[in-house]
Image (cartoon, rainbow, N blue to C red; front, side, top):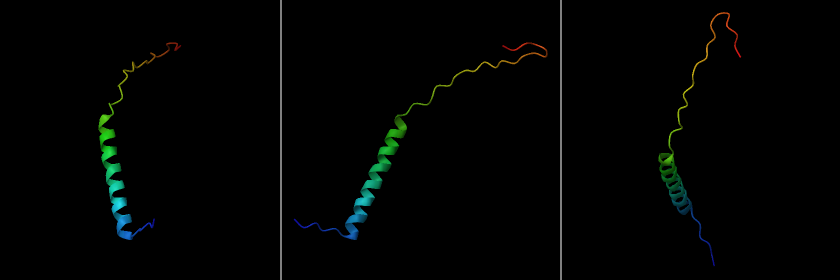
Length: 52
């Protein structure tokens, strides 16, 4: 079996691989949910108050 590989074939293969990777990235990117926002309670000590 003879394998025929031309520059045109390599370009077409690279195009389809890049296109598939782009589509897969877009689909996977839209499936992620945003990270939950944690509420942080600020703790500020008054002047002269001991902080534990």
